[in-house]
Amino acid sequence: MKSAFVYLMIGIIKLVSFLPLRAAHGLGWLIGMVMWHTGSGSAKVVMRNLELCFPEKDSDQRKRLANKSLIALNLCGIRCVMDVANS
View 1: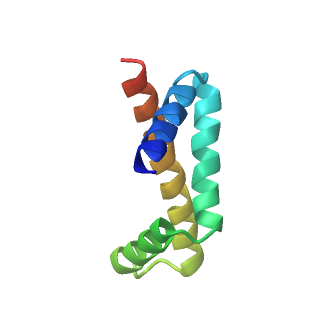
View 2: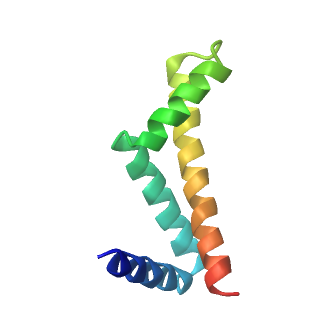
């Protein structure tokens, strides 16, 4: 079963590497939004870290910053996948 997952991930990486940059960025944005709206573990960690680092900011400001952070994380991840797959 583990090897099937590995092959699936390799296939996804290869598919993403064929996307135009604009489409890849759209995919990264979409993944970041899904992570934010589903309340993933990453979203909870980001929110907690922002609470600790920026106690002076109100909850809405931290939420906007967390959302942007998750989107940026996924844009970077998609770009790294593209760079590695195309090298």
